[in-house]
Each structure stands twice: as structure tokens, then as C-alpha cells.
Length: 296
Image 1 (tube, rainbow, N blue to C red):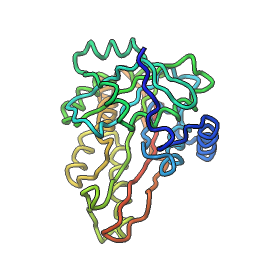
Image 2 (image 1 turned 30 degrees about the horizontal axis):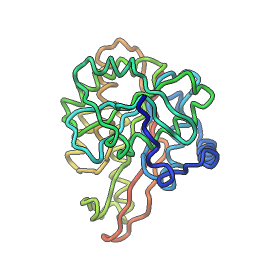
Image 3 (image 1 turned 180 degrees about the vertical axis):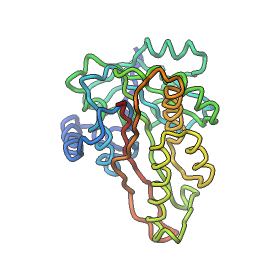
């Protein structure tokens, strides 16, 4: 049995189950339940000191009693991938308890011929999926023996590939027992990120960044994948989870097109934060946003 270590615990978040549990509890209880039960959420993946509170707003919308499977789509930061990859692990460790990988769903995904495998070192180097595991463990703790996880590492996809993966995942999104976690930070701004877009009409740099992010968030809320692709082309906003978000939008689009779903879907952003406020061109910051998708 291959076990993936909690390789970022003790640095990006606490490795003490007690301390971590208390922290997550605080963030969840601070957030309002305003747009649930979530079928999918978008939440950040930075160190918890920066984005833990923001993530709480997304996870607060989840109704754990219905969830039996959690799909986690995270962008690949270290390895160039043209498609999506699955984990070779059967278990993901967290300081709270271990999460079991859904081998049946993995087998079904592999059978499509569209997925590759990440080796363990690739898996443990990546933080975009891991940063969600403690939150998932926390919200699901009363049901810890009755759910599985489906981690998927998402590469630099073309719009056509986003559409193809969207079609594959749409049938899982249609099932109320599945929750999708889309892992993404928003604008990475500053010379170290090689991105310094600044529109002075929007105020100070941090206000310009917020307007840029809000424009993207408004487009994501329309659930229109083509409009989101267009926005990224126009502004080049450094949203690191743009491909996982694109796959979610395409999955929604696929369900809308098939008409088989009959549900009204609604995506709302509930929280926005920045790691710091940039006022000069030598500053840098990363933005975080939390959203939930519901089916009515």
C-alpha cells in the first residue's frame, strides 16, 4: 500500500492534530453558511497563515452528510503536464487522519485513456492538492470511514483539453454524493512573479489587483468557460488554478448542454483576500478567493 506523507505539514500548516483541528474549527465557525450545500468549491492553497481563514468560507458551504467522494483538482506547479495525472498512492496522510483514495473511480478514469500517473516524489513535492486535505478531513470527521478522495493533478491544458476533461468529470459532478474541490490562488503580483499589470484608473496597485481579480471572479460566476478563457487572454492574470477552474466550468457547461441535469446551477464568490497590500512596484502579493457552486 503506497502512502503519501503529509509533506508540507510542520511548515505550511501545523503538524499537531490538536492545534490544526482547533485552527480549522475557528475558521469554519467564523464563516457564514450562505451558499450551500456546495457541489463544488474553489479555495486557495497557500500556507494556512495566509489563506486558511479565506478557505473556511468555501468549506463552510459543504454539507458533509451527503458527501461520499471528494474530487480534488489542483494545478501542477513543478512538473510540465499536458494533461491530467492521478496519484500512485492509495492513502493520503493528514495530521488528523488518513484519507483513502477511490480506486474504483481511478480505474474508471484510467480507462478513458486520458490520464497519466504521477510518481510519489512528484506527488509529495506538489502542495496544491495537499493544502486541501486537512480541511477535507476536518469537515468530514464525523463520516471519516464512509468517504474517499479522488486527487487529480491538472496540467497546462488547452481550451479543447479543458472541454474534454470537463465532459469526463461532468457525470461525477451531476452526482450529489460527489464534492469537487478546485484548488486555486488568484493574482500573483510583482516582479518575482513576472506580472506587474497596473491600471492607474483603478486606484492604488492593490486596488487595481482587486479589480482585476473581481473582474475574473464575476466572469467565473457566469459559468461561461469561453468568457473566462478570453479574460485570461486579455489580462494574463496569474491565476494558478485557471486550468482546474476551466475544467469545472466545462463540466458545468457539459451538463447544461446535455439538459439531462434539469438543475439551475449557481456559483458565488464568498470571500476575497490578499497576502499584503501592494503600494509600490517593488512590492508583491498573492490573492485568495473562496467560492461555492450549488445546484438548485
